[in-house]
Length: 88
Picture 1 (tube, helix red, strand yellow):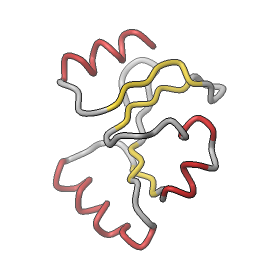
Picture 2 (picture 1 turned 135 degrees about the vertical axis):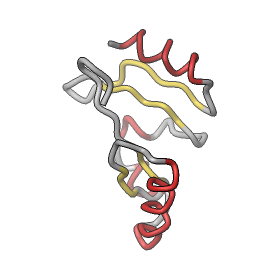
Picture 3 (picture 1 turned 90 degrees about the horizontal axis):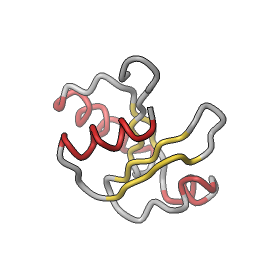
Picture 4 (picture 1 turned 120 degrees about the horizontal axis):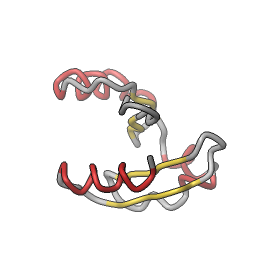
């Protein structure tokens, strides 16, 4: 969670059978936010995620689920901070 108003969720783009691998990834990186599993079919069925063409993809939604910002690919901490500031 990013104070004061940003909540984060990681989406692992793999079949649910790889949940143990996703948990190991989360734990090894010490991530403090939850991970969800989503395969390509799940992502394509939700319009806001159809634009995911790269991993990682950064998608920011407002409280109503509308897309407010996005970026694709690896970002430096400074780039990610700039993106967060643009939506908070």
